[in-house]
Amino acid sequence: MEDRRKGDGHYDGPMTNPLSDASSRVGSGLRIGVLALQGDFREHIRAVEAAGATGVGIRRPAELDDIDGLIIPGGESTTIDKLSRIFELRDPLKKRIADGLHVYGSCAGMILLADEIADPATDLEGNPQQTFGGLDITVRRNAFGRQRESFETDLDFKGLDFSAGDSGVDPVHAVFIRGPWVERVGPTVEVLAQVDPDHASHTATLHGVARIVAVRSGHLLATSFHPEVTGEKRVHELFIRMIRGEA
Image (cartoon, rainbow, N blue to C red; front, side, top):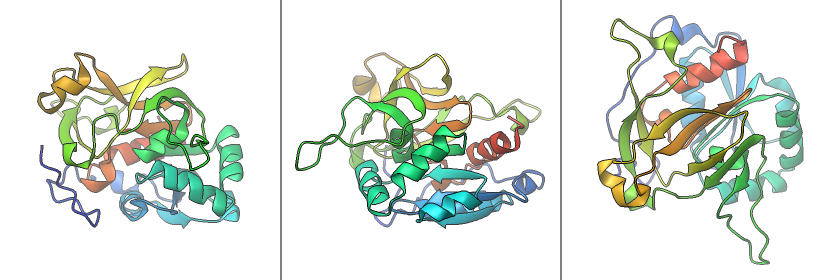
């Protein structure tokens, strides 16, 4: 599958599922932070603002005190991990997650929310990368391959009943760019979406096994893919409804 995300992070493929008038107001009154250390945080800010929320970039510990929820964007999980320590965000963020802050992680954000990485990167001293944790899952980094192996597919995604039309819930059009997959889920984790084991572009990689690419556990949500780059707003709307206690 052609990678339609250009070098500057701009996605060039089809845009899907614009918000309805009602959905564009679902976030009204909420202040949602997006961790703005590295990665595609601007796209996430635009997505939550399209849902009526106020989106703010988060770079300092004090800014965590004034938000209703947080998004950890795609990017480089090792870089975000390193910068979170430099900006002294790591420990305050871990505490907020443990205290129940609603957090959504996409791609690198999923890795950073995982309690365990199957193949962690290491620094020059051999120390493995760390995560913020909170999700009882094991992830594998870059599981679907490198940049040139990025792909798109439609997914059946649980929890989107609020978007159902006359013909039911439309599939989510998902873009995977060096995405992780989930290899283990704990008993409190709900699987929301999987890539079919015979997906044409990744049959050899999947080895006949459906791979988990979206999960939820209580106040935490994570996807391997990037809904923010395609105009697929329902994942962000689900997150907002979680914050409101409606999902």
